[in-house]
Length: 383
Image 1 (spheres, rainbow, N blue to C red):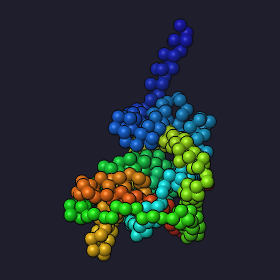
Image 2 (cartoon, rainbow, N blue to C red; image 1 turned 60 degrees about the vertical axis):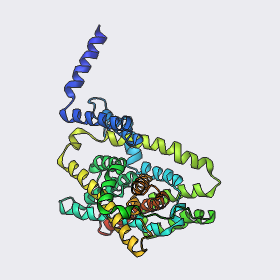
Image 3 (cartoon, rainbow, N blue to C red; image 1 turned 90 degrees about the vertical axis):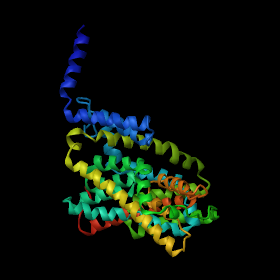
Image 4 (tube, rainbow, N blue to C red; image 1 turned 180 degrees about the vertical axis):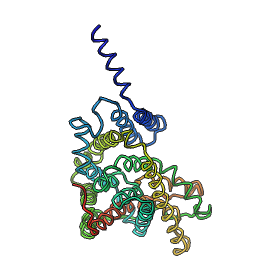
């Protein structure tokens, strides 16, 4: 009987400690679980994040990312604040990516660069809205459509925005199939979307594939050393993939390691989204600016595609430009789908994957450039 009374007392105390902000966050966590499970919107991301939100906002549980001594706090401080999780994810991503389509058609690399313009345009907008430089850079990098890069930059300069930036980046990554198509259709005619491109994959020698991550890693790190941890891990993963002699390490990196890190990363992000800190106007503005950044990336990519169509006398389908974001491989799939809607004989996936792979490199370079600018201005990273 005493045990039952004690349990009921703890239950009452728990509900009494539950604030309205925490209750809203628990509801939001349940909503993300619904989207991940019932609607299958990136369940590998949304399910851990949603469950983390619920755990982090339950009173007296000690499971938020900021509760010292808790298991999630340990993962948060050792995995996110040290930038370990983002770097490990890039190792796995490098092991997954085949740069062959990009190497077979190098001109699509320009779309990977154009797909990052939204970052810099949003940076200017954030500064105009009153965000300090460190916050503006962290918000703008959401436009990379690359969760690990956004976490990496925000951890260095604006940790108070880390929950909002992280959830915005990963949410918009999962919503790329919803965000991009209306923009693509608004900026192109059906005739442009129906342009056929050569579907055949150009053969790239294994020697070139092996040399590419090695040479690219050296050159890009020398140009932008601030992005060395991410670029280094990305190219290491790809080098292992293409070497042909590290199959066991590649299998672990692209599957087991990536899945474990994604689970812990999502859990930590969710557990850092506390009601009192998250439910404020600044957070809403971060989400709005993040959406603007990704939309502008798509706009600049498609507009460059239209320009390339003119330059090449109709040989480039402008939709390819939308794959310049680093939402790999979601953007490429969106381009393929929209192209086939306009012309069932169209097969744009090979070209779109090349642009998408270029966007992955472009996002890291964009982040490295922004970090270098911050360093040049005398703004030091957080300890």
